Image (cartoon, rainbow, N blue to C red):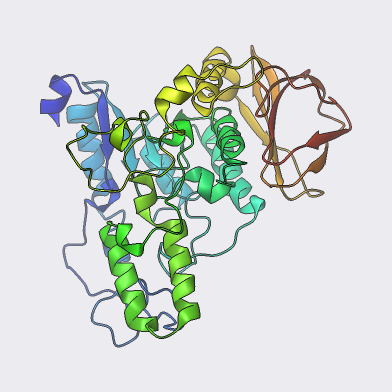
Length: 408
């Protein structure tokens, strides 16, 4: 670790760092029974299976904090290194604060997977799918935004990475009509939440999942290959079961985030030279959805997804006391389940209201009486300031987001 830090690396993203300590007795895992008719081909474990999950014996093991503390004191702290730890299977708040607490934490932050796991089926692993509602998204965000402020910890803000599908396909509508609006909605959300933002390659231009009409052979990830192989073994003659399994693949596979980055409209999207074939097929939309097109985009009343991200990040830096470090409060939306709204408050920047319509429908959202919006400063539909009511009912279009300045 010192070698790379001495070379100038600013820090580490530590893969499954909470698995570095194991119970040295190496006990057998508890026998796990999973319903074999659930449709989760990859995760089915029957009572007679040879192997069972042994997480309890090596997740946050007995000497994990000892090892992390040694790393901090001997390597990370002397180099003032930035650290983010991937820590799957951890939900205990005290344990997390012990790891990322401002005073005595071993790491700067960890990756909490509650948001990207929201459509998982409990007990069935990642390659299973359930319907979700906006409140399923709100709950973990509100929880960790609030707790990290109260307990003096630090958040990592992300909704997309190499182990998950594209966020605009997962949380919004990635059709040609709505892809850009959805991508901007997600950008507005993330740039107004506390913590360190991780923007995954392609997210900043709104890259989407692989088309559903591609042959299953285009999926190259070993998890996808094994999942489909197991699905065929279990449901070879069951058309409906295979249809459901394919839907899981089309929705959740890691391959979606691993297609070549789309830089421009040249062969292979500029990812590699024309005489080198990339390991995965380039998305069909690369000629219109790429960094070059979005960088050069020019309009009096609109921004590309990339330009929108840049503006959002600049606004975040300008008002960091509110958006990065400020207080957080969720607005109760019991009257409208498709809207996620919250307040951010800073000592100098004042109070801001973010309103996000996570639906493909027009929505009439009621501004709470106690929230006094002075003006809408940004939206996802126009380049300029939205001309909308600042009190009472606010008309929201499909996948529309608004950012308002309030008088608190």
